[in-house]
Image (cartoon, rainbow, N blue to C red):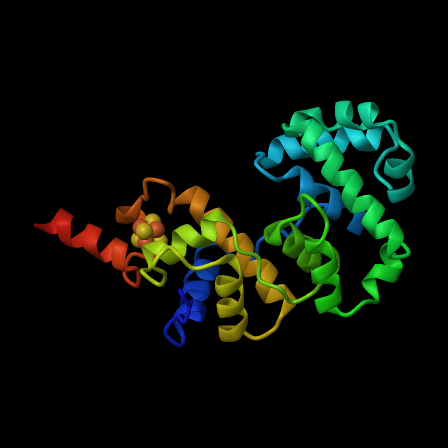
Length: 228
Ligand code: SF4
C-alpha cells in the first residue's frame, strides 16, 4: 500500500520558503462558521469568485442560516447558488449537510463534539468528501486537520515526495505527523500552497522564476536543462 513518509524537515522547509515568499495569507473569508460550511460545499469544482457570488445571493435572500436553508424551497435555494455551478447537486448536498447538523443539535452542539466524531459524522453525509469535511473542520471549527487538495498533490509530486497512488488519508496523516498540531499553521500552509499553485507552480510550472527552485527537484532539473 502506498504511504506518505516525507523526509524529516522537508514540509517545514517548504512552509518556510512559501511563508517568506508570500507572507501571512488571509484565511477563509466569511462572516460566520455557517458561511464557511456553505462555502465548503459550494467551492466543490468551482472558482472562488463564483462561490462568492452565490454566497452574496444567499445573503441577499436571507438564506445564510441553518434554519433558513432547512425551511427554504429547494428551487429557491438552487436558484440562489446557481453561480457556483452544479447547483442542483449542490442544493441537495447543502440540504443533506444542514439536516445532519440539525440532527446534531445545531452548530453550537456540533462544535462541542470530539474531532474524530465530527469528522466521522461529516464524512457520513452524502456529498461531503474528505476535503470538504476537513475544510469545515479546520476553518469553521478550528480543528487541527490538514486539508489536502489538488494543489497539495501537485506540489508534493513536483517535490518528488509522492508516487501518485497515495490516498487522501495517507497524505493528510503524513502532514499531521510531520507538523505540530497547530490550527493557524495548517490554515496558513494550505493557503500558501494554493497561492503558490496559482502564481508559480501551475499546471505548467514557472520554475525559472520560482523561489523554491533551489530546494525543488523539478525546479533543479529545469535549471540544469536551461544551463546546458
Ligand atoms: S520550482 Fe517549479 S515545480 Fe518546484 S515549486 Fe517552483 S514552480 Fe513548482
